[in-house]
Every structure is written in structure tokens, then in C-alpha cells.
Length: 416
Ligand code: EPZ
Image 1 (tube, rainbow, N blue to C red):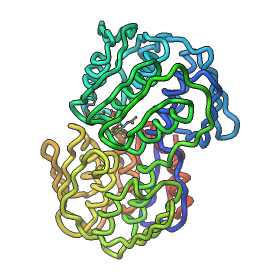
Image 2: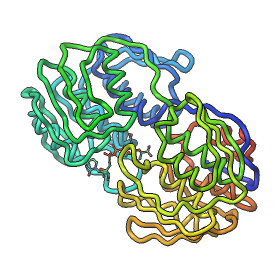
Image 3: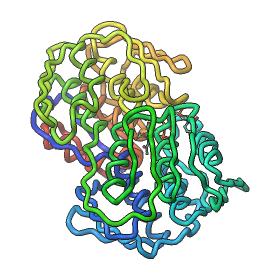
Image 4: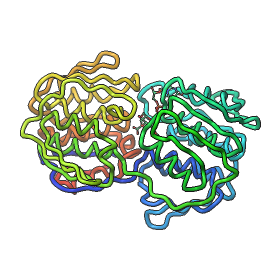
């Protein structure tokens, strides 16, 4: 499947974003620990979510859809083995580890997959779980975990890893011990996972700060929950308006969650107004370079918006520098942008961009989720036709991106 984009149409309209992929996925993993019925509303149709649901079914959970609500019954969950070919489809399969260890005190799973944006090790997950008393052996890419001696205490993360924070937090949720995890990630999606678990009866405090405290509880019941809006999709739409000289109103996500992007867009000459969960952007005739963008853990500039803003900078007047501090190989989309006339040089984790007046349409290939979405943004700006191939990467985290952008005035067609 591919997208065929006719460039030159201004984005002009209103859109509400889906629930956040990176909130929904750990919350789905968390449902493994719950004994009661869970109603998860506004389930987004991302392929990563579909794959996570198939993992839950492998673990014996019963799932059914009622409209856009996912009804989950985990009463018959079992610590079954998740086949390698399923586990390697997504990074989030690793989140089932903490949840299974909490509920069953054992787990057997393969190494996770995920976007090819770097090595994606899980050493921080394993180090933290071992510090909590989990015995983990690794053979032929399979992790065998025994948490019969799971205990509380203080665990320090060497780096505020989002996934490791979520895994350790879930592992400590059930039991009779108190666990303190230090140097944790502070992303809004972590707060959302903690809020979800607390609504099921967990006792988690401090999420959103760099220290999380967990009081183990006997068991978790059911709940009804709506995860937060997707700040990365919201940011992608704002940049779509900016790169086409258009205007947009994005709703459904707390603008506070992407304040760092708002700051950069204002610096580029866009006019943004924020009201409740709505953000309105009007683009200038000509975008200005924003100087230096460096990705960081929350609340710094999100790595998941790095490709999108870099793409915008290729048609912003002046020179900009982007520094990708989170992942070692997150510029795979740049050679595709260069095919479209972008003037970018990358060295290791640094990209230097000299803005050009506009891009030109070309045949380009998505290599990962956010880089792929950025090629679509480039196509919106480009003169002529752009074909973005291998859009399965994009569909992992964007639902019907073609329809969404076409509803905003763009011309994007999905074809075989
Ligand atoms: C989560 O990935 C997100 N995925 C990523 O979104 C996001 O880019 C990332 O957090 C950073 O915000 C989901 O939530 C499903 P990390 P995760 O552990 O948990 C290194 C997207 O496009 N690290 O915070 O894998 C790692 O290599 C995806 O939606 C270790 O060294 O990110 C990276 O350099 C892409 N050892 C850095 O930490 C570990 O054990 C940040 O990774 C774990 C991570």
C-alpha cells in the first residue's frame, strides 16, 4: 500500500485527535493484572493496538469491541508464551513482562520489536526487575522470568526510560511491598498508565515526577477509562498546517503536553492560540528557521516529533540544526527528503538543514513510523506528486492519515 499526494493544497480545518498510541499500549498491558471487566473507550485503530490485543488474547484475556469501546475481561488470564513472530511486531510487547510478573510471578517472552530507529535494548528493564528480585535468564532471544522472590525497596533507573518506568511500575503494583523507583520518565503517558491502574485499585503516587512510589495491593478490579489524546498526532497535524501555509484547529489533547513544539512553531512565525484542549494555528507566508532543536525526555522536545519538525525546517528560511539525543538512528527518512529537494546534512545524531523555497514531488519510502509520517508532510508541501511507499510503518500509529488530511483540504489518496 502507498499514499499518492498532490502537493500545494493548504491545510484548513478542524480535527480531533485519537487516543494516544503510547498511552493505550501500556494500559492494555496493565489490563493483564486486572480481575474485573475493563471498558477502555475511544480505542484507536492503529495496527500496534491490534497487535497488542492479539497478544492479550494469547494470554487468555477476552476482548470484544462495542463501538469504539474495548471491553476486556482478564479473569482467565494465563502467563502463556507470546510467540516470537507476534512479540517482534511491536516494542510494547515488553510491557506485558511487568504485568505478568505482578500477577503470576512468572513470565516467558521473546525480545520485543519496534521501529528500526536504534538498537532498542532492554537492559534498563532487566536491571530494574532484577533489583526487585526477579530472576531472569535469556536463551536464544527468549526471556525466562521467575518473580517468586519479588520484593520492594528502592530501584534507580540509570536513564529515565519510558518503557522501563512503565514495566517496573506495573511489576510493583501487586503484592504487599512498598517500591520506590527513582530517575523515572515523566511523560504524560506514564501518568495516564498510573491513573488507569489507580482507577482499578492500585496505589501509585508520584507519576509525572522523577520518583514514583508504589504500595503493592492484593488485586486489581475492573474500571471504565478513556486514555489521553495523542500529543504526537496533534503535533503532526499542527506541522501539516505550518508546512502548507494553512491554518488548523486541533482538539482532544492537552496542549500542555507539547508546549515545547508550540514554542518552536511560534518561533518559526506561526500564530498559535490555546483554549482548554483546543489549539489553533495560523501559518505565516514564509516560515523562519528556528535555529536549534534538540530532543530530550519530557518535558523537553519529544523525539517522536523530531522527524516532523525537521521536515518543516527544510522549507523554513535560514539554517537550522537538529540534535537527536534519544535514538541513535532516527534520520532514515532524510535521504528520502533529499530526493524531494531538501538540503540536509546528517552526521551521527546531528542534522544541519538549509531551508529551500519548496520541495518537489518524488517516489519515497517510509522506513519507520514517524519518519514515514514526515514524508507525507513533505508531500503536502511539494510541487507535483509524491508517492509514499511502505505505509504499513505509518499505520502503526496513524489511523486513516489519508482521510484525515483530505478532510483538512489536502489531496492524499491511499492505493494498493
Ligand atoms: C517509548 O519507547 C515510545 N514507545 C517511543 O515512541 C518513544 O520514542 C520513546 O518512548 C521515547 O519517548 C512506546 O511508548 C510504545 P525509552 P521506549 O525506553 O520505551 C534507551 C513512537 O514513534 N534504552 O524511553 O522504547 C533507548 O535505546 C515510538 O511512537 C536503553 O538503553 O523508549 C533509547 O535510546 C518510537 N535501555 C532511550 O533509552 C533500555 O532498557 C529512550 O528509550 C531501554 C531504553
